[in-house]
Each structure stands twice: as C-alpha cells, then as structure tokens.
Length: 152
Image 1: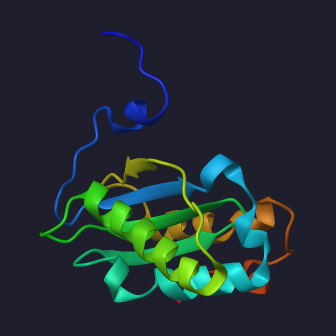
Image 2: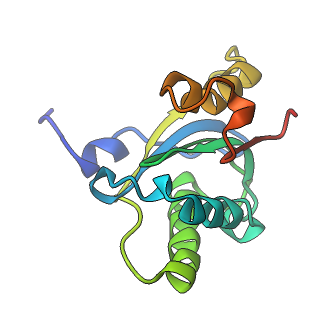
C-alpha cells in the first residue's frame, strides 16, 4: 500500500458509526493563532455550541485553543462524521465572517479517534479541557473561558 500523507491520510480507514464517540481535532489554516484574540475566541465558542453545528450529533466536551479545537462528539444516526465536522467548520466560519470579516478559518480535514467501549469518556473530557493547563496558559482549567463539558 502506498504511503499517504496530508489530508488524504486523515481519511484513510475512517468510519462513521451511529452513536460512536470520537475524539476530534481541527486546526486553523496554517496554524494561525486566530483564537488568541479574545473577541474571536468568544464568538467562535458561542457559535460552535449552537445546534446548527451538530445536527443529530452531540457535543460532549470541547476546548478552543489559539490555533486548534479539540472535541468529544457522539454521532447520531443521520449524519456521518465528515458531514458533522464539515458543517461545524462551515457554520463557525460563516458566522465569524459576518462578525469579523471573511477569511479562511480552518485547515482542510480533521483528525479523529474512535473511542473504545473500555475508554473512560470522562477521563477523555478531562484531558480535553485540561489542554490550556498543559499548554501553560492557565493554572486551572476553570480559569480558561473557551471550553465546556456535559459532565459538569
């Protein structure tokens, strides 16, 4: 099998299973730190929790970092993973464009990892929301404003 790199490699072996939970990562175009700007991060955070982003999928936990987003998403029965993620990126980009001017927000593609039955979803959620702590941005996750989790 030939070696694949870049965007195509992200899709290799990807499957979308109804009710499956996925750990997801999306980066900004050219890893620009767009969300280091508080107004941009607050707006993006507000838009990405809107039901228009998710269809019948459920956003369980997420954090928006200066140049990327991590989330824990449970698929519904209607939409596949690529559709859900492309819709989230499109909705957030469109709404940010209306408030902050047009421009490319997200890089193509996304990284996904299907969570196994034996994985602890709450531990995965804690890992996600602790990203700003590990990055040295804050001392405690609760000091960082751009995250949420259904298990609060």
